[in-house]
Image (cartoon, rainbow, N blue to C red; front, side, top):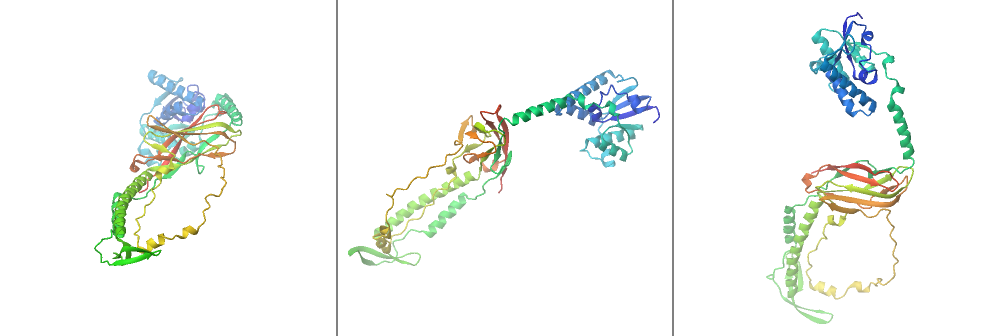
Length: 449
């Protein structure tokens, strides 16, 4: 490599994991008379990201120091070392991605594209400075010159304070974990965080109510008194039972009945239709309620090595929902039956019943079976400032065991059309836990039509 001015593109890791860039002898590394370090947009962007989001405090600190130094150099326009300058590129490459079959999703490809663009537009040869093998392979495939920094410039592992700190924290954490319970809230089928629910899709509408009533009217019409009749005398248990009439019913059957029975039947039938419409409307209301309700049951597991004492679980729901554990409000009303028309045969059968021959055992003593006591207390639903919460607690949860929530929880949407995924916040506390465990459970709602 001839001794002339060289243009070098260090990758992001050179700035983070090697000696500070102002301390590296770039003239010697590149065997040049002078060196210009070129900083493309992707490197500047990655350094900015790492100074805020990296898991390592050392890397965060290094990225922060590098960007501050960049700003200082940009303002002063001075050399960073004798005969070593720095140049900041602001144009993001575009056509190079398609031309050289590069991916815009890859940070490495962004760096390669910047080097190719620089070479094409300036006519100068650029050198990639990297110790990453995958980047080195890509650069060689596109005939980009690569130089690897000597290991002497690399930050030694023992110089990294994070490793010692992490090892110490991991040891303390392990010791802590073996001394306390480890509680986890899961769904009934042991899924963590996400519970998938389907809304009911039972169809019942106002139109269905009208059709049901019309159908019932056709099936059970009033008995009209103008049907042909004749007087009949019948004796029941040896006593005369006069004023009987013989009716030709709409079905074609011939029935014998008391005149007053016809009136009673028609009155009962009229009341039946009123009650039946109320029944259908209530069924529609329950159906609509079901169609905008999801239900689930949670389970608490103890995966630690000690029992959890005095366990308390609190769930907090989104503001727009109603929450209940009362399953009875989703039950359909009891179906009502039309009245029976009493014929002569019916009257006779009622005068003698086979049930009279069945002995009554109600007075016999039947021992009560004791209820098994639940380990949980019942779910306590509260509402405050239009926000529902549910809580339940247990005296103890042994390690290696799990407890189901004592009741099914129902979440009611304002409308079935507004049903969408939502989150439930939870807090788990125990007497022998140093801090409460907080988290969220995602409920995925499948609103099928």
